[in-house]
Image 1 (cartoon, one colour):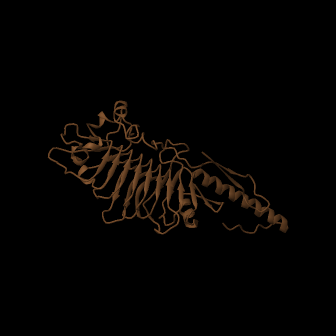
Image 2: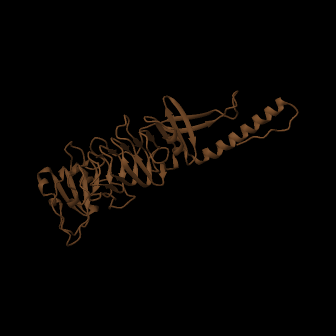
Image 3: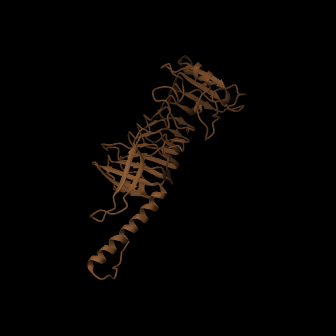
Length: 343
């Protein structure tokens, strides 16, 4: 914004009036941006820069270098294609998490050079559009809620305490080594790639799960009369297979080579989960009788609330708790802003 000269009696008065106008403009700008509750801080070599508004993530990523940390406040941010191996920390992927949720809207791509010294990390992010992960070696996603993610080239990626409504892998891409831990995958596509699932809840067609390994998981699918899936080469240990159709005769014996690995069977979702029936917006808590009956190889319950990292939506990174704006500029005509971080 350009501040015009003000016709005053002398230079000192002129300078004073400019200073007052600048202060008023700065305060008006601050009030407008903070009301939107959109703030991104970029930490680069112990130096922090703040960006405001719906495009704050776009600006922070543009200024970032590999290895930097971007922290997002609660609110809705416009997406940007991610081409740098940074850490992006949100306030949480669900509305009821401490401090609210951080949402990224619009589709975006992830494409990071494989030989990068650093790797991408995202925590506490809700992305309710499509994510295309073209290249992200060793990427980590923690406590995120993703609507749709396609991964033609994301080998060795890991998902911890995440919910994916649709996981789309590619048989022609490099997706080997992806691991899910205490996460939910609402729908897997039919490409056979060597993913690993530990203490997860997964919608998985047995005949389309070749090369995948499941451990301490709850697997579910719905077969109708006449649909006969074939055997497959999946490896499964201490898993429960739920036939959503309570009237169907198809059971986990379709994982024929795995019978000796403790593969149990139940029919009907309401015989396994407290509320979950395979739809969006419900939790994944097992009935007490199921949780106490079916145990993983570590002695804890199967599913997302057992195992090494029981599901917890609360983020582990520091949150942006409070933003304090000074009521006047300093001797350098700058308006001090204090950002308070906390857990």
